[in-house]
Amino acid sequence: MSDNVHVYAGLYAGLPQALIAVVTICTAAVVGLVLLHRPDRAAAAWSTAFALGLLGTYMWVAAIELQLPAVRALASGLLLCAEPLIWLGVRLFAGRRATWPAAVLFVALVPIMLALTVDSDVFPIFFRVCFAGAGVFAGLIAFDLVRLKGVPRDILLPLMLSSGGFVLVAALNLVWTISFPQTSGEEQVAVLRDMNVIGTMVTSITATLTIILLVRMQPTGQAARSAAPDAAIRERVDRVRAHQEPAWSLLDVRLDDVRDLRESSGASDFARLLTRFRSRVVAALPPTADIAVVDDSRLLVLIPGSDEAVTHHLRTLLERVSAMDRRESTTAIRISASVGWATMLDARFDYDKLLELAAQRAESASELGGDRWGRPRRDAVTIADGETSNR
Image 1 (cartoon, rainbow, N blue to C red):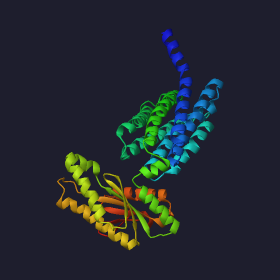
Image 2: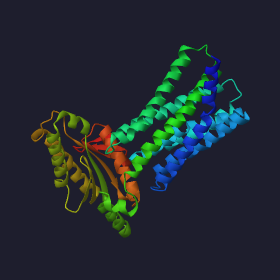
Image 3: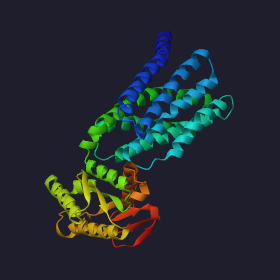
Image 4: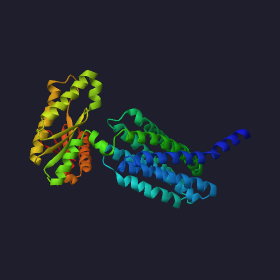
């Protein structure tokens, strides 16, 4: 029995050194291979998550050696802050609406509140609540990774599995707290601290793998612009901005229920359906429109004209896509499209902002059932027959 205790003590004594080594290497890899390679907002959020994790790691080890409870609590809070920042980076990478307040409030309040309450009776409860909150963000990471389109699942799998594991641990903690209220808060906090440290190492490794593969699989800089399918649209926006011509709009056209359509039809039938979808979208647009095929089920369209002219083309586009349901499709699933509509004035001639707005509005239209276009600037989503559905 004594030998077992010594073995456990030896393994635990090596845990801080292992944590420092893993987090340091992962932070260097993310900063060097992600932030410097592609310095955008998503990379900045991910790098911040790893930087805070690195700071928390060194503080945690120092607090153990110097026996500083407040510093250890602060460090534990910093380690928990990786989850909301990684989630924020995933949303920014996907072009979805960035929910900054939730992540920023968690990062700003949790470490400080843990340090301030470490000597009070509410600390065990507050730590468990913070751990559960980090578990919620881990679940959101997994959810947003599943929604990523055009990315191989094997790239996303490491971070999805570690996030799912975090959710499971957080859920078991809640069950333990409810089922065994007689267990002292100090004992539960001690277990959660150890799980937090181990989880930090696992998340650091899996997040590093997924993030690096996500970013490095995409070209960057001038090469990215020339290789990207929307390079022609980006160049057109640059010219439109130079001449300050506001009467242009970007449309993000997406086929609805792609997964269901793929599962309900054979590979050849589904390929023909996608081909017909793209051809019908192109046929519904004026020859002056610039069209980029992002993937088999999504197109970007830069179209000139007034709001009334764009509305006319949108109505024609949706009608032609839905006509496939009646005449050409062998599947029983209703075929439709969702379109996000953003104008130059909405984005102030900024292409990245234009693309982000159009993507957000396409997602909103899809979530409302599809067969419609979204333009939240008017606090409404317009459906195919021209009626309005307030959000």
